Image (cartoon, rainbow, N blue to C red):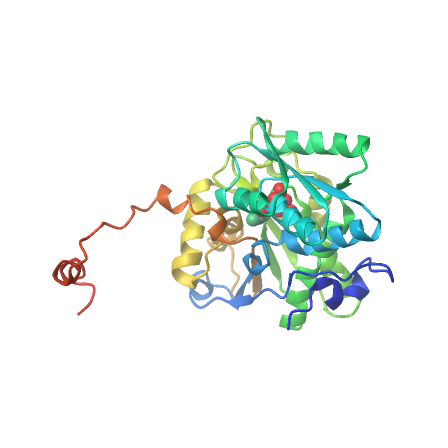
Length: 351
Ligand code: AN7
């Protein structure tokens, strides 16, 4: 039975006697051993942690459940976030369930259809700005200085606390930390959270070491790689279309303390990995999520991982962004409902 991360990992979370142990069933996501790409890429062991299996379809639920629990504990009446889509979907869901007014500020035309649908159905107050995520976050920060509304972006430390539980789950399942963790990087909260989780669990004696953190930004939105703010970030992976990450310094610290790397992958590499995850492993993740696998493919071409244990994070489900396949695949031909015609269309396919 799913217990939720607040209950399962309460000893490692900011849980007090007054914190409601709320849950929508977040966490406990599958760690899927690769059947095909592990061999092909020459990895000792390769696993995919599929965060798309969270209640609103992304890893954001782990952080949101803690942020909302603390908001409820502190008698907050409303929450607010800027979002490229997944944070707004998660905030709207937990806000609805636990009686908080939810305000989301999103970049117009640049969030996936499914994510917008979630915010609409969960009945969030949606503000769509003619601008990008970084501008939305700036506005939200200013609003929270002026009004008594709880900020639930990852600059809220409770978000990072919740998200670190994914690292705990990996160690609990593998019995130790992996050698490498591949992860997409946008606003850089998640890489920060995983690193915190790995370090804390190692300190608690649950792992003998911590993994190298290997983060990937999209090439058109790679401020950490280029070491400068990107004013007009561009990428097909709208979730990580971010030019000035809030947790920039902490991501750099995670990279350096773990002796890892933060690099970037092109949109073509992202889409190619997105297709491979689906066609070779049966995992439908969203484009931003596929940046982790795209990064592994890029690195495995140069580096020997044959004695390494690797975990690749797929941060969200592909169902959120149903427009993407149309960019590279034709819709199926429409045939009459006639056996002979269907048989003919299948000649060479079935025998
Ligand atoms: C699927 O929802 O920033 O580096 O506003 O949705 O912690 O930002 C989403 C980010 C990776 C990057 N994969 O994580 C938002 C938002 C998916 C995402 C990231 C996001 P961070």
